[in-house]
Length: 176
Image (cartoon, rainbow, N blue to C red):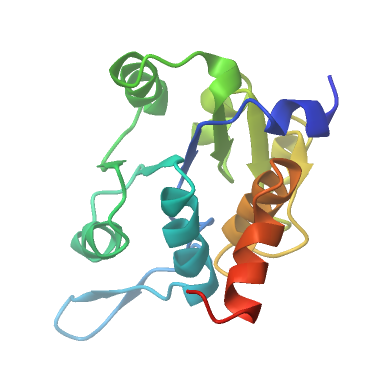
Protein backbone atom coordinates (compact mmCIF):
# COMPACT_ATOMS: atom_id res chain seq x y z
CA UNK A 1 0.00 0.00 0.00
CA UNK A 2 1.38 3.44 -0.93
CA UNK A 3 2.21 6.06 1.66
CA UNK A 4 -0.32 8.42 0.02
CA UNK A 5 -3.09 5.86 0.52
CA UNK A 6 -2.04 5.22 4.15
CA UNK A 7 -2.13 8.91 5.09
CA UNK A 8 -5.81 9.23 4.16
CA UNK A 9 -6.99 6.98 7.00
CA UNK A 10 -4.99 8.68 9.78
CA UNK A 11 -7.02 10.06 12.69
CA UNK A 12 -4.45 9.88 15.50
CA UNK A 13 -0.80 10.88 15.51
CA UNK A 14 1.46 9.66 18.31
CA UNK A 15 5.19 9.96 18.81
CA UNK A 16 8.14 9.26 21.03
CA UNK A 17 9.75 12.29 22.66
CA UNK A 18 13.51 11.73 23.15
CA UNK A 19 15.01 11.47 19.68
CA UNK A 20 11.84 12.78 17.97
CA UNK A 21 10.81 16.01 19.72
CA UNK A 22 14.35 16.37 21.08
CA UNK A 23 17.75 15.43 19.67
CA UNK A 24 17.91 12.64 22.23
CA UNK A 25 20.41 14.44 24.43
CA UNK A 26 19.94 14.85 28.16
CA UNK A 27 21.67 17.68 29.96
CA UNK A 28 21.93 17.87 33.74
CA UNK A 29 23.03 21.05 35.48
CA UNK A 30 25.13 21.03 38.67
CA UNK A 31 22.06 20.68 40.86
CA UNK A 32 20.85 17.64 38.88
CA UNK A 33 18.14 19.56 37.05
CA UNK A 34 17.32 18.01 33.68
CA UNK A 35 17.36 20.28 30.63
CA UNK A 36 15.99 19.46 27.17
CA UNK A 37 15.73 21.43 23.94
CA UNK A 38 12.51 21.26 21.90
CA UNK A 39 11.88 22.62 18.42
CA UNK A 40 9.02 25.13 18.25
CA UNK A 41 8.22 24.03 14.69
CA UNK A 42 7.02 20.70 16.07
CA UNK A 43 4.91 22.47 18.69
CA UNK A 44 3.40 24.82 16.12
CA UNK A 45 2.15 21.99 13.90
CA UNK A 46 0.69 20.08 16.87
CA UNK A 47 -1.71 22.97 17.46
CA UNK A 48 -2.79 22.78 13.81
CA UNK A 49 -3.22 19.01 13.91
CA UNK A 50 -5.51 19.34 16.91
CA UNK A 51 -7.47 22.16 15.29
CA UNK A 52 -7.90 19.95 12.20
CA UNK A 53 -9.44 17.24 14.39
CA UNK A 54 -6.54 14.85 14.85
CA UNK A 55 -5.94 13.16 18.19
CA UNK A 56 -2.33 13.86 19.15
CA UNK A 57 -0.16 12.38 21.90
CA UNK A 58 3.15 11.03 23.14
CA UNK A 59 4.43 7.72 24.44
CA UNK A 60 7.87 8.06 25.97
CA UNK A 61 10.17 5.59 27.65
CA UNK A 62 11.59 8.11 30.11
CA UNK A 63 9.80 9.63 33.05
CA UNK A 64 10.83 13.27 32.94
CA UNK A 65 9.14 16.30 34.49
CA UNK A 66 10.55 18.47 31.69
CA UNK A 67 8.78 16.28 29.11
CA UNK A 68 5.56 16.24 31.14
CA UNK A 69 5.66 20.04 31.23
CA UNK A 70 6.13 20.23 27.45
CA UNK A 71 3.29 17.77 26.81
CA UNK A 72 0.97 19.83 29.01
CA UNK A 73 2.06 23.04 27.29
CA UNK A 74 1.27 21.47 23.89
CA UNK A 75 -2.14 20.35 25.24
CA UNK A 76 -1.64 16.82 23.96
CA UNK A 77 -4.70 14.59 24.13
CA UNK A 78 -2.66 11.94 25.94
CA UNK A 79 0.91 11.42 27.09
CA UNK A 80 2.39 8.34 28.72
CA UNK A 81 5.75 8.50 30.50
CA UNK A 82 8.14 5.84 31.75
CA UNK A 83 6.78 3.28 29.28
CA UNK A 84 9.16 0.34 29.05
CA UNK A 85 6.62 -1.54 26.90
CA UNK A 86 5.07 1.10 24.65
CA UNK A 87 2.82 -1.44 22.97
CA UNK A 88 0.72 -1.59 26.16
CA UNK A 89 -0.06 2.13 25.88
CA UNK A 90 -0.59 1.84 22.12
CA UNK A 91 -3.24 -0.85 22.62
CA UNK A 92 -4.88 1.24 25.35
CA UNK A 93 -5.00 4.25 23.03
CA UNK A 94 -6.58 2.14 20.29
CA UNK A 95 -9.23 0.96 22.72
CA UNK A 96 -9.82 4.38 24.32
CA UNK A 97 -10.41 6.04 20.96
CA UNK A 98 -12.02 3.00 19.24
CA UNK A 99 -9.47 3.05 16.43
CA UNK A 100 -7.78 0.38 14.34
CA UNK A 101 -4.07 0.26 13.45
CA UNK A 102 -4.65 1.87 10.04
CA UNK A 103 -6.02 5.02 11.74
CA UNK A 104 -2.82 5.61 13.73
CA UNK A 105 0.42 7.27 12.65
CA UNK A 106 3.47 6.93 14.88
CA UNK A 107 6.96 8.43 14.81
CA UNK A 108 9.70 6.78 16.85
CA UNK A 109 13.45 6.51 16.61
CA UNK A 110 14.72 3.50 18.51
CA UNK A 111 14.30 -0.21 19.25
CA UNK A 112 11.69 0.39 21.95
CA UNK A 113 9.45 1.93 19.23
CA UNK A 114 9.59 -1.02 16.82
CA UNK A 115 6.54 -2.87 18.20
CA UNK A 116 4.38 0.18 17.38
CA UNK A 117 6.21 1.14 14.18
CA UNK A 118 5.53 -2.31 12.75
CA UNK A 119 1.81 -2.31 13.68
CA UNK A 120 0.49 1.20 13.12
CA UNK A 121 -1.06 2.35 9.87
CA UNK A 122 1.67 4.88 9.02
CA UNK A 123 5.13 4.82 10.60
CA UNK A 124 7.98 7.31 10.52
CA UNK A 125 11.39 8.02 11.97
CA UNK A 126 13.82 10.97 11.99
CA UNK A 127 16.75 11.04 9.57
CA UNK A 128 19.26 10.20 12.32
CA UNK A 129 17.58 6.95 13.40
CA UNK A 130 19.57 3.74 13.03
CA UNK A 131 19.34 1.99 9.67
CA UNK A 132 17.58 -0.98 11.24
CA UNK A 133 14.81 1.37 12.39
CA UNK A 134 14.55 3.06 8.98
CA UNK A 135 14.07 -0.36 7.38
CA UNK A 136 10.79 -0.80 9.28
CA UNK A 137 9.04 2.51 8.58
CA UNK A 138 6.99 4.03 5.79
CA UNK A 139 8.61 7.47 5.97
CA UNK A 140 12.04 8.78 6.94
CA UNK A 141 12.00 12.49 7.71
CA UNK A 142 14.70 14.59 6.02
CA UNK A 143 15.18 16.26 9.43
CA UNK A 144 17.03 15.03 12.48
CA UNK A 145 15.25 14.29 15.74
CA UNK A 146 14.63 17.53 17.62
CA UNK A 147 15.04 19.54 14.43
CA UNK A 148 11.55 19.43 12.96
CA UNK A 149 11.22 15.71 12.19
CA UNK A 150 7.70 15.56 13.62
CA UNK A 151 6.84 18.71 11.64
CA UNK A 152 7.88 16.96 8.41
CA UNK A 153 5.69 13.96 9.22
CA UNK A 154 2.71 16.08 10.23
CA UNK A 155 3.06 18.25 7.12
CA UNK A 156 3.03 15.10 4.99
CA UNK A 157 -0.19 13.87 6.60
CA UNK A 158 -1.85 17.28 6.40
CA UNK A 159 -0.82 17.68 2.77
CA UNK A 160 -2.08 14.24 1.75
CA UNK A 161 -5.40 14.90 3.50
CA UNK A 162 -5.69 18.24 1.65
CA UNK A 163 -5.50 20.22 4.89
CA UNK A 164 -2.08 21.90 4.67
CA UNK A 165 -3.04 24.29 1.86
CA UNK A 166 -6.05 25.44 3.88
CA UNK A 167 -3.83 26.24 6.87
CA UNK A 168 -1.36 28.12 4.66
CA UNK A 169 -4.16 30.10 2.96
CA UNK A 170 -5.59 31.08 6.35
CA UNK A 171 -2.22 32.56 7.32
CA UNK A 172 -1.61 34.30 4.01
CA UNK A 173 -5.04 35.90 4.21
CA UNK A 174 -4.55 36.90 7.86
CA UNK A 175 -7.39 34.71 9.07
CA UNK A 176 -5.52 32.97 11.91
